[in-house]
Image 1 (spheres, rainbow, N blue to C red):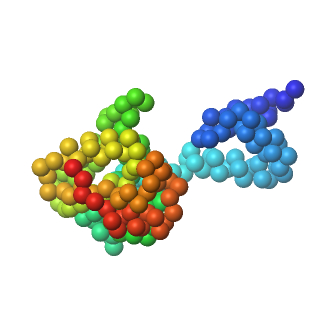
Image 2 (image 1 turned 180 degrees about the vertical axis):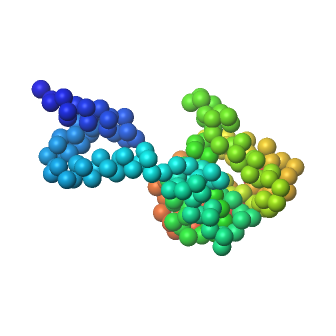
Image 3 (image 1 turned 120 degrees about the vertical axis):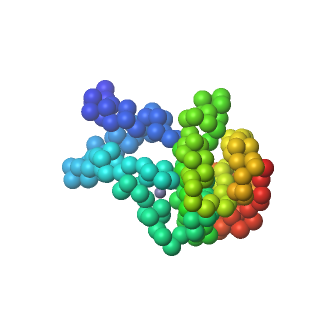
Length: 200
Ligand SMILES: [Zn+2]
């Protein structure tokens, strides 16, 4: 018989990315054995997630203020925009140290089967941003996973921006097909950025 409180905690873990019911239960039992102070810290950190951060109003990245530190940094190249699916992907590109421009976080990639259409990800915001008078964006770098969803999203963006002066480039296939940007190391991403290719 599993105590109700442990079941409750396990239920919260169950279904997190990569976590099934067994692992969820293992976490719950492990936490139950921790000192009270440790549990309080854990709970406080979760509360901080719900209260302390929001989406940057410009790029969509998580931010502690209205505008994230990258968008607020005036030393960055405002003519180059790196478009990523998720904040984690942004961190990987930023961690490579090879991108000095700004970012745009879509939130996800197009996947019609899963119901991710141009309306459900932050594509409209991207096009508005590019089209803004005086924005001066000359190049957008598509840093997407090299898979069907990445290809679909890249093609859609290229079509929407056809006829504009914005150059569209995509990370070189230094990333093996099917690889996930999220797990790529900095050197690989730096190389893929360096060898990015025109698309569309
Ligand atoms: Zn931002």
